[in-house]
Image 1 (cartoon, rainbow, N blue to C red):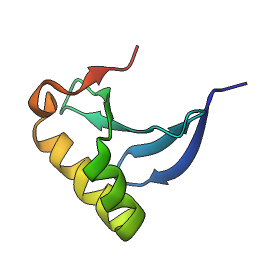
Image 2 (image 1 turned 90 degrees about the vertical axis):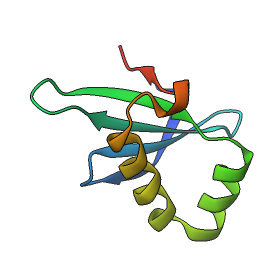
Image 3 (image 1 turned 180 degrees about the horizontal axis):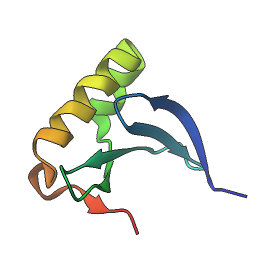
Length: 79
């Protein structure tokens, strides 16, 4: 059994997850020919923006991560 709940699964190739402690993480498929996935833990401002805007915010965040996969050093590779 997973310790994460899938809140959103998008055709933009991302999933928004919530762990048991309530922390949100977005997992985004990145790359061109060599596809991989990265995860970024949402900070307090991002979590509040998701609470206000829902999927529209998550879509924008996923697109920003796809455009810059290291995402300011915050992204970690998904094993």
